[in-house]
Image (tube, rainbow, N blue to C red; front, side):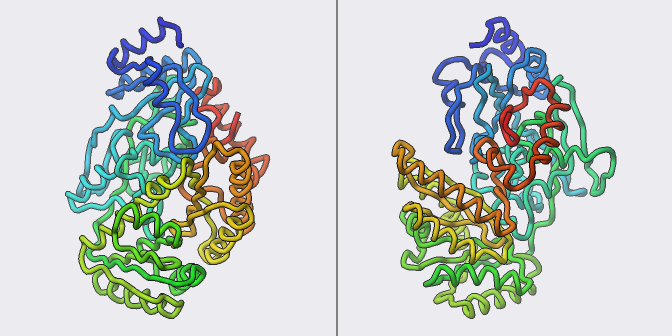
Length: 461
């Protein structure tokens, strides 16, 4: 419990109705979507104006109160689990205005609490396209997306959140506003603080406004499902499509375990007897879309696809994509604990990584469903378990380490889109170096000398 005088000060800043101290409220914000130990914060506050946000950060800075900023709490690396040291959770869901969508210059300015899917829909209504589409986009917020550098199903062709952040306004630990980037296509002014803050998981500043790049909507698109009776053939088809210099906007992989779970959950008509399937969409100029679709279909058949199903219309396409987006929810229903990992490898190594996942599942006697953005090498091996089973949980932890070791040995990375948080901070040195950790800690210490901004995330400490 914080000093009552401080609680009163926060009430004066954000309003008494936006300060939460009840045990039930505090417990609600003690965890996120990662399988890490919950930590109950000392206080939760919900600013509804930029001024209140800045003043709140300033009070936390003056009093050395650790701050964890939280959007929807959907992140999968423990990035929004607060700290036990008088931690304050700042909710951004009261800062949810789209401040500007500029059609002429194709950018938008938003507050951090805007829900991703709602923003994408607002842009689309004006004939513009915001491509990043994390699986949680129906509830996740843009501030969280930027903090975690979220990816999504369209990452193969369109990249991730960092590719669309043109500028930021954020508060430092003194509650002072810092501005970086611009609304122009080019900006070479000053340090690239935008690049530093994107993916910093709330450890270097608190977002106030985000300027995002928009692009024209694709003129045409075509979606198909390729069905395989061998998992390795599906993964080889992914590598073959990329090797043919075709870049679909989405190229998703699902193994049989995931297919059956998703079909049971969504009834989308997926082939439950398939060993694996690829969900593929190409978009762009109509003529090129049709040409690429034919080539993709030919490659899939050459690689052993036993069936190709082309979506007849947008409704059929949307039904399948909705089913794919439900994969995490579908798998989560099967066991008390779900561990969704994010290991990413160079695209040419996808077949090898898929085989490694099967080997690891067998070695550690675990159920591992695999799905993900195979086109950009970003697979999501998903381990179903019960953390209360101590012996099994030890095998799960060993399997997670083995997955990361395998990915890194292939030249891959610990995370393609979920961030480091506290779940992967202990593995960071394996991918980088001791000097990298020290350099990062020096940056953090310079910008946040009292270590109040989401302490413990990414670099530990």
